[in-house]
Length: 229
Image (cartoon, rainbow, N blue to C red; front, top):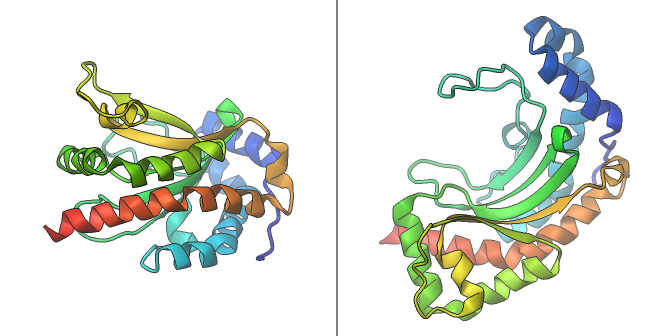
């Protein structure tokens, strides 16, 4: 396993302070400390899990410098004009041209909420693709529901952006929340921050992502089928 230095409370506090100060001067003065306390350990997590993910999907992008989030925000297309963020994440997905319908797994730390999350979902909830995916799930629900149950049994919870009107018809009850959603996420949420500092934390994530693997494979096959049409 790759070395992991751990992410400790001082890292969370520094991210929060940098977000509060929201100045280039403060960030430049503390950039190397932010990198040491937070960004480098995130890269170490990505490296520790790279072998697992490359076996799951050989086309997944796994270069730490491209999948670990930046602290500085892109404010060009948002009303929220804070320059810096206090949440940081790793995104495990394919990249490329065209519609981003590939599945995604992620790890995120949210210091303001004192939580970390690890999840699996569709990367971008494009309406045309979601309609295709809903039809695929409804036509043969067994494989999808088995994959979803693996994630739920590992401690994930289902979160959805649901339609106001139920459109699921006679679908099996366990499938209805997924069908009646513009988008959905299976997400493990923990308020236990101490484990992030432990050397074994990447192994904790490895177990979670192993439980997500059937769902990732299901969504990957669906995306490939959709793009092949």
